[in-house]
Image 1 (tube, chains in turn red, blue):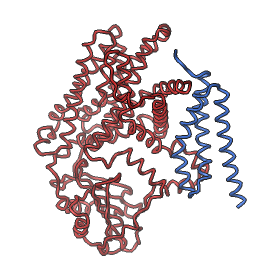
Image 2 (image 1 turned 90 degrees about the vertical axis):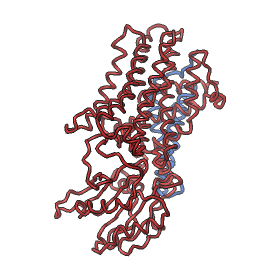
Image 3 (image 1 turned 90 degrees about the horizontal axis):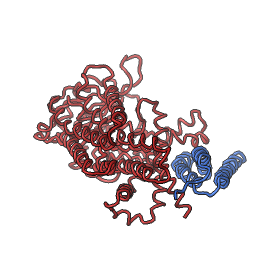
Image 4 (image 1 turned 120 degrees about the vertical axis):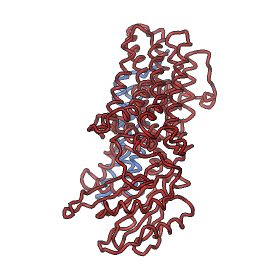
Length: 528
Length: 94
């Protein structure tokens, strides 16, 4: 009995201490599952795309451009617009060579698939920035962000484990929702949101911890390798995937890409080719990898490789082999990132993440309601509780509003200003700060008023995003739908959907007569 | 009635810092005794360290007295240290 009681205590506090951080991580991380889609919308200079492209016809356009810009490159990567990745992108890596005077490192360009011309797009944080926030946060050094988010994940993991221990009737809880009693309805909601995607939570939390373990658990490798170069090389051994073979340094003619493209196409059947990776172009040991989206398993792509000197396929045995632990790590990484997921699974990932945010939010609200109704504590604790209750509004509804503001700023900020991507992020946090303040400003009004107001603002902020898109670009919903560009149209449709959810939630609030009941009705709409 | 573990501030400190220390020590010990290559065992031990941390924290909050909570961590740390030192000794002897 006592063990379960202590686990109950641990569940409450490990969940509560950083619940706002966990909410932020769940929301921004879930948005990260659609980072390419968000990126696409935030770069409206990329024209609406008509259906799928024949990558074969895009190849000469890529080659023509590369012959101009990537003459000295030692690696070239061509990405074709395909399914959820809608960009026609060139990447090239220049070696460090002072004599040529060419800037070393990676360079990239986006091409218009219709014309082959380079696209100049606005400086934007895009989906990438939103996604990165869930593990490095913002405004603080990266490593500090890793530690803070890991701490959050560790508390989340504790809350999950202790949550499992205290629910004896986990299967029964899963099916019970009792509307009548308010506090019980709360608890049931928290249980349903907690239990339904439980395997997802366990996976996402533990893999999240593992992804950052080289920051947070650095003492373990240090104990073995010390802090010197040996640690570095152990790290490299674990993470680097060496190319199939190194450059020989001897110049030799390479056969044309299109010839190898045809062989690759043959080897892959009818699968579309999503990328071409050229290693050591112009070298005797040059080789080219062609990738197609993987159909099964957790890998994103399954590549085939060809010798660029004689055009022969390279044996797959020399493909980099993972050791068991590396395999475990990469499996966890792939599960966490979900890059392999198709549209349906991707939405399931997203919804599981949003349910995670809902679980955290209902947990936080359940706690405030329990504290309020606790007859033992109706004294000095009230002030702190009031502050927490009001902050809950600004966190739970304010964050989605702030993310909407991030999208709005993408279109409203002048295109030429310096540091534009940073100002998009600043807009997010300025608006979030305002929503956090708002419940304190009209202190005379009930908490309900703040919930309703913020839900209404959230609903308007999302519903008008397609309108904003219509006004500020040619990539609007009608244009996208009529061209069958569903990645682009999907963004606007999703925003409309979120807006409607917030609107429905805001309508439900005032129906309740009892003050503060709004706390109960708002949890259905924690989506961004 | 609400239940809360006794000496809560000390337990929190013990769980956060002591638990982290013990998790690291246990993982280092594990990396020494696993019969696989060094790179492999270090990475696997790192992956397991979060389980050790979780177990340590649960131990600290579920034991009835602060003394047994601290003693448990201390014993786990000592066993780990013995393993680490012992394996170091065997290594240098070999």
